[in-house]
Image (cartoon, rainbow, N blue to C red; front, side):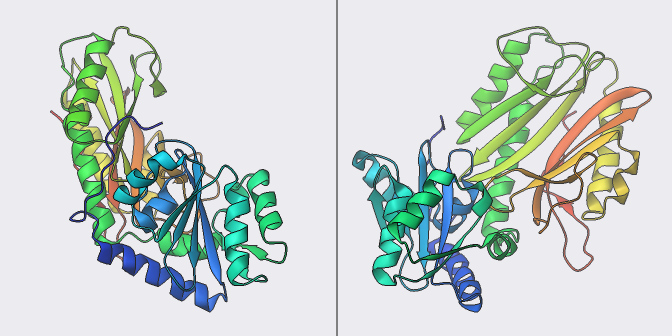
Amino acid sequence: MRRGLIARSRVELPEAVLDARLDRLRTAMALARLDALIVYTNNTRPAGVSWLTGFVPYWSEALLVVPQQGGPVLVVALTYRVKSWIERTSRVADVIHTPRIGLEAGRMIAASKSDAEVGIADFDGLSAGIADDLREGGPRLALTDASELFGRLRAKADPAEIALAAKAASIAHHALAQIPRDDGDLGKSLAAVEETARRLGAEEIYIAAATDLGRDHRLRRIEGVGALGRAFALRATVAYKGSWVRVVRTVHRDDPTLSRRATEQFAEAVAGLPSDSGFSGAASWLVEGCRLAQPLDAVMGSRVTPPQTPMPTLVSVQARFEIDGEPVLVGAPALIGERFEAASLLVHPMFD
């Protein structure tokens, strides 16, 4: 469940941008002979619907129905009391409230065309109950998997999405910059990071930590308080206006140059994406991005086999390097270049 403020900004996400995304989607639907397309959303899978409408759920679930003609309709499993909030924070033609979102969506589509061809983005991720309700609501509807169609469109970041990701990256970077180098209190560091991110407008922030890199370099969600070792790392996962990024900072109290050297290797490796050749010197690495509905889906990395397609143009990258035998974790979002252009970091992960 979200804890930060969700508010719509027509400056950061103009209606013309949403119109252009819908136009691209409808063109692809026409080529695929689809009468309607359905995208599922909940608080862990918000990225498909937010990309088309700006809607970001605090909780619960919904189906976005995009007809070939007319505006998109959001069918939500939320009470009517949040209708005005949804209408303020998203751009849809109508909001329908019902506990059985699949049944209502099926009925609505079937009312226009009983034997409509309906594509479903991320069909495999749709619960069996919702799929069964869609079939009950429209017994003659032809339901097909439209993940490839939607993924090709969703993977390509437009200027508005890049700007939102850059803002999220800036929030994460400023938040992690608040970690006191000479204070070993984990609680104080976490509080400083989260307070800064919230103050700068983050809708959500999740913090993971490797509290003592000399013992364990794995990043974990932290419960309670504790002490930090002489070398530690924190990762901030930040959401802003539906855009999610990760930034990782490592603090080596005894030798700050280790992080600088690792960051230089990291920047060189990222510049070569989507080729993975630059990460040959990394102990481990991971590239995440939005392909369908999950905002940070693993698409390639040292433990991702095979790489996922389509490759998003906007990604968050993490890597671990061994510098003079010391582990250094570094991470930041990046924009993958097209037509042989080098990838570029949205924020430079250097803090010292």
